[in-house]
Length: 94
Image 1 (tube, rainbow, N blue to C red):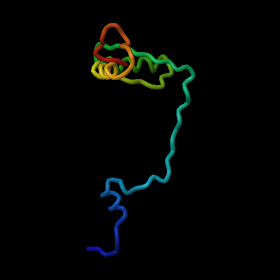
Image 2 (cartoon, rainbow, N blue to C red):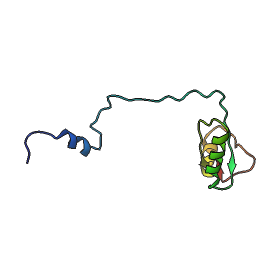
Image 3 (spheres, one colour):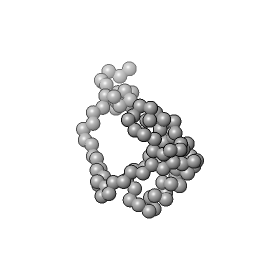
Image 4 (spheres, rainbow, N blue to C red):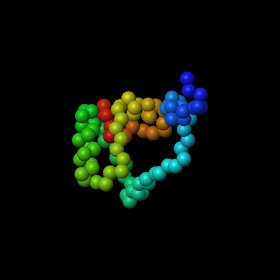
């Protein structure tokens, strides 16, 4: 047994970081988009999502890309004050 006191390094590790304090943070801010445009695309297959992303990255200055399923769209439509983006449903959206 060691009676020299706490080993702060092991105390910090054993507490899963909950005893730590953030003393400095550095953030990189992205530039504001010049022309903000939002698109919603219906996709038939899950594997198409990466193809769509890569195609848009080659053609335009893409600032964000999101993917979600028809199930997620159903939750938004059920709880939000929005209409479905298309007359027909798609299994996936990007």
